[in-house]
Length: 577
Image (cartoon, rainbow, N blue to C red; front, side, top):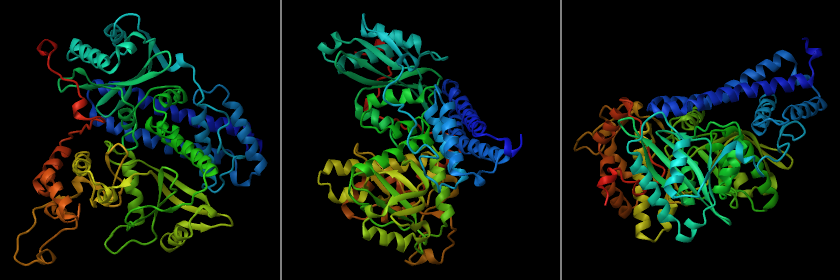
């Protein structure tokens, strides 16, 4: 077919075909999650997660390259692109993933025009139709009757959700779950349960599997998640039951790796999850399922809507100014915008590309609940009248190469968007409750340890580079100095009477002296003393060397997204009181 004979309908078909190939490959990796879980292939889980993230860009590049072989995009009129969108909409009729296909279409148009034409006439800035107002329940939900006992309902559940490995102690797990449900429901609620609804798909992440559902009453429901783990002997056991929305919120948090969820109906899964977690935004739920590109799309729509409904101005973000990133926020909205500065402080021996590579590393790595996820955007536009003059001046002073001032907009050529948290240094400076302070410092040390055990050396561990969530979890968010644990040599501090000995002794660029950490993680004396009491091992090279050995041996850390005291006992049933 010659270029002159190509039609918009044909091009729309090719774009849809590119999306469907991408989704098939995505699902192929996702569908293998249960087998990886059952056979304890934990390193394969991490490889699969990285491969799945990289699939989108590969599929997008292939599709765009094929389109350039069919026609000359830059020579087409606006009418051509408007007709192409309408033809694409027609081909999405009854498509089970039409909302994801629209995002793929946006990516194609964005790639062709280098993200310089964000126009709803040409692409799906707004969705073509609503897809989150309701769902066909039988397609994504299993319903279990509750006419008999709690235990019998659980037996129905485990008859349906089967794994190709034996339970470590099936009767014990039934007992633990039955007891937990009876403790968390009142007698009145227990007699008024109408049904139990559960998502058909299991949720796999790391070394755990989760069953997600809710207990339904006439006028309300109670969400729950059953957490399943594998023992070292390759046997399945129920680790806990989560029923509080706070715990579910953490499970679906922004600092964790994406779930593997095998479904053909992502919108309906997200709609159900949103009913369980109404405080979670739809883009957060899409992202948690691994549809991070569509998460960006839904975020952008939500962001535009919020701009229309608010009138506050973008301001410099609270906290100490970063040496690499310029950070600002809209006080009424829950994200922070980060732009790489044109020049870095003398102490930062890194390049712009190094920073970009670090953020890509975190995107594809297991964040284990301790590293914030980010969305990367190109040519992001903000209304000029919503930017505070002080912020605009600082942007021009520090990020001029990334900023373009238009008539009534400010175009930012490259940025990252991240969930807003309270900087830990500000939290510790304002918090007056001694227990809260101690808990935050304890969690800071745990965060550093867990990040290291996940094969990431945080580099700059100043507490200003950590945030604290509304649930009290400490999260790392400054990535410009991260590297793999194997890239650092943890040494004992050389002994010398000369206070300037380190200037003359042989020190390699990758040498790290943990004994010096106490001087900069936390500066305030009384807070430093608490940190040293709780995490003295972090200041010894032996600790870091041991972690390096564990990582080199292929040990995969599993950090439960719930407290240790929430775990069920694992002793045999007959030994329980």
